[in-house]
Image 1 (cartoon, helix red, strand yellow):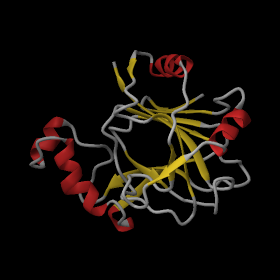
Image 2: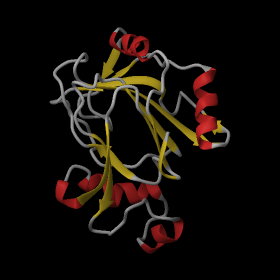
Image 3: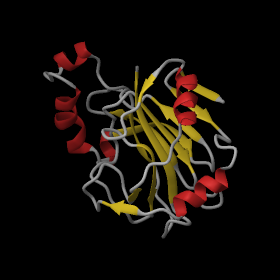
Image 4: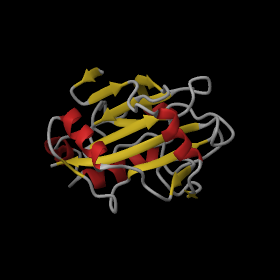
Length: 205
């Protein structure tokens, strides 16, 4: 277990039976949203999680968590190929934590999760309430609409501060509401050799 800081945690060998989890991901049904979603590729129709997941995440963040699968994805699989598109690239979440377990085989893996700096505003994290007021934004939703979404895919508007590489059965747990982040590289041509993951979003209790 590696703490990159108090808000970013990396755990290798997350699942004790990762190939079985991967098989679940390969054999379930997916929805596809073209470029209308904030992520590329497909997302499983069904969520896969147990109470053990909730307890595990509570232990990792050292507090109770709020899970609301109807509002925030919790336990669904996602995959994207080299050519899939999405509505956003660099973004931040409207929920406390994002957890991603990577299920791509190591021989296929490329890139990782990127943490970015907003160049125009010289911001490495999402603004605080005081900073939002200074920027003339009433909340993070307005900030997103004015300062993030318009440049989400513009490479020159963001500096890569850190890349956490993809690795089979690696969990990355990040304060998604705090950091500008995104996929650094897509790869593969189908679900078997592409970027495959299981995602969990949850709030602090």
